[in-house]
Image 1: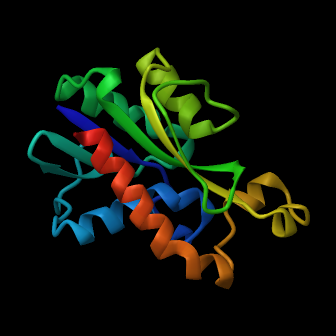
Image 2: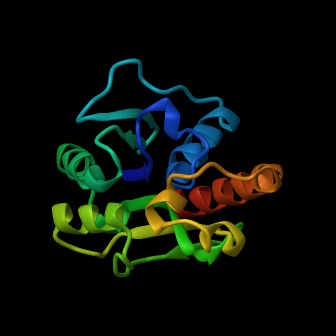
Length: 173
């Protein structure tokens, strides 16, 4: 069993913000694969099961994502090595995609939450670069991660989302 977790915040006002990149990727994945989210949430997450893979979008807000991850991994007996989290990373240039089999939180509060709840950092992560020096230099880090993508960035989203889907498929296989 595999567990793929998209990071984001649940309210619609966060759609197309940098912090919701993980949700955006999973919604794109679900659409291109012809899947459908379950109508009733489970363990504070929107989810779906496709074969031996469970996809979730925790609704606990970004800093508490680990609670849903722990609940799903415990219930479905998913080992940390079979978990992939998809999250934003403002230290990577916009458009960069980086896969890591394990690692530290690197200042990401969602990753800190998952590490704390699972009591390990031995899970995979797919990090999506959001850094835009022009915008980031003008506002705080918190305002930056909650900011919407610029029009130029939105134009690049389809290629980035396709790349992320490929990486998720590689992980699942």
